[in-house]
Length: 75
Image 1 (tube, rainbow, N blue to C red):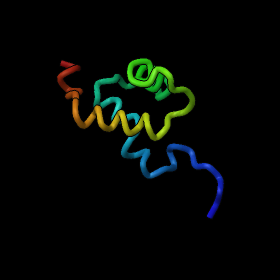
Image 2 (tube, rainbow, N blue to C red):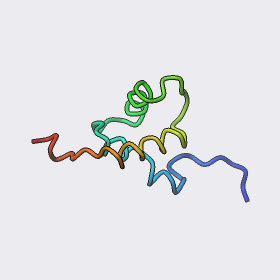
Image 3 (cartoon, rainbow, N blue to C red):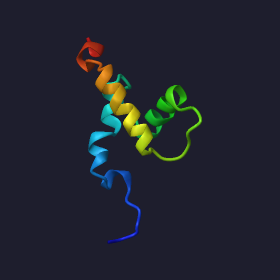
């Protein structure tokens, strides 16, 4: 077993809790750095650093509870 840290993209959970959850919650299709900054300003202003498990879990929960229909936004 390797002790090397994996990048977020290499984790299975990244598929489940990633940028798609922020977009499902209503954030536009922007670079991940921009999405993370906007998300944290609203929900975790004290947090810093790379996307972490707490960010992903919060985004997934918000997307599940308050989904946004992207097609309606374009109309």
